[in-house]
Image 1 (cartoon, helix red, strand yellow):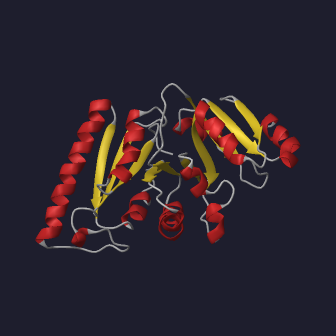
Image 2: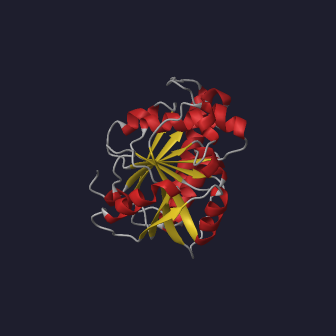
Image 3: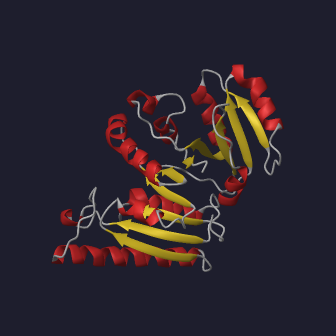
Length: 270
């Protein structure tokens, strides 16, 4: 963990879809952050400069022009950030490839990677976006994915949702409080897990935030909708890639929560 409160890397490519995550971070109190790394992957300015799966070096005029446009774009974003927060530190990286993320994170100075997603259809999610998310999960220590349509309401408190499972590794509550402005933590559980759920909460040594549990019946959607009206929700889950196709659409699936406009935080126990 770095000495500063929270150093986050924001993935950008010049599109509104990804820029949305920067808006949420700078215009809400969801995250605690005093350093931002803008990580720009060349993509939208010209087909020749489209992001590649593997790094490619370009020396032609078109690519150089694309980099200049990207630099201007980054300057605009940095000015916007400083307008909202004059004390925050902002740096940036301008790269050719998605694979550069892994190299950048390998420096081990980033506390959290942040990206945004705009889900258009189940098919697009299953065959394209879910693969991108799995790729990010495999590279990132801690990853926050924010749905494009996520609506933060400043008059509401922030509530972290966690689906309880006795098989999951211990949760680092200190890290959660270090990274997020949390007002409440809610564990979701099924009826047969009630006794274990109660004991789990009792055994938490220091309850910095109010912690409660909520039994989820078969009508999961109704429960989520009610919570969404009363809180700004973040759903926490362990960093695991989804290998089974149908699990993309199962209970508590990433797709289901993104469709409910709920940010997902994938945490790594290490």
